[in-house]
Image 1 (tube, rainbow, N blue to C red):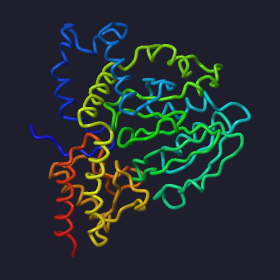
Image 2 (image 1 turned 60 degrees about the vertical axis):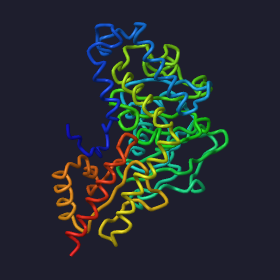
Image 3 (image 1 turned 45 degrees about the vertical axis):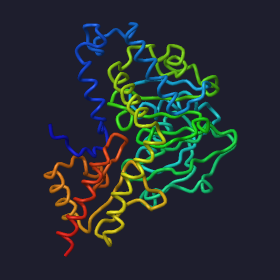
Image 4 (image 1 turned 180 degrees about the vertical axis):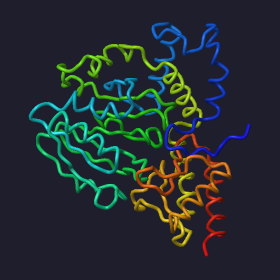
Length: 362
């Protein structure tokens, strides 16, 4: 079977090895005579899947024991509301750093719940960079500081995270979790929709410090309390069992590749192939992000005209490349080079970009 060069922004590529293993087990999981999708979430067989996913994530990310790992639903979009509902008490401020559309959406939800503040923003620059840590304004009564670690639409990424004494750092890592090592202990809460680097859509991972949970609000609906899910080991209601199973399979694959350090090395190599094609094109390809803010995961660029953008995308599609359209809000082109995108796909895209430039740079 011919595999597409899949650069979709999410749901995104999954490792072929993982898909093949899931296919082998699809109708008869561990001799149960059932698919994992048919198992009771209270069964011993599913319990092993659930615990393995938690254990592998803790091992790969070196998550300390004073953090809970939760598997929730509703994507990052639900977290935009759930975070302030749990932690934004009266008299406190939710501090948000704006670096793109998703941080704007997180702020929008928080405004419905409590007082908010914009600690820094690069909106006026078209979200083409990440603010310097020194530029972030804080308040003495900030409940937390919220950042979006990687911006899929604009192709920017934090390379150094802010750290402020006595302020909880919360990060939306939906589009770059597991792409590089991070110090989990520098964050009070990390959340990520799975559909880019962790697995298929349907499950959201939340990594939250137990100390933060102790101060969370309990006067909100039961299912929206983080403590509810922590106390029930993410089994308060029926979890997205198949998505968690696939997440576990992806984590196994990451471990087999050599862990996050090896994944980061390969991600740097993949991104460099495409960024070099942009930088060496003498202005034919124009990257959106400033070089010191470039993302390893989402490479955004334009050609000299909208007409050439459309021609590039049409010819790329015909050549077997999928998902290179920029987000509908900004247009242009975008290559999402998530963990599961193979090096060969990035090599092929680089070659296509060079040949397209040579044929159309009149």
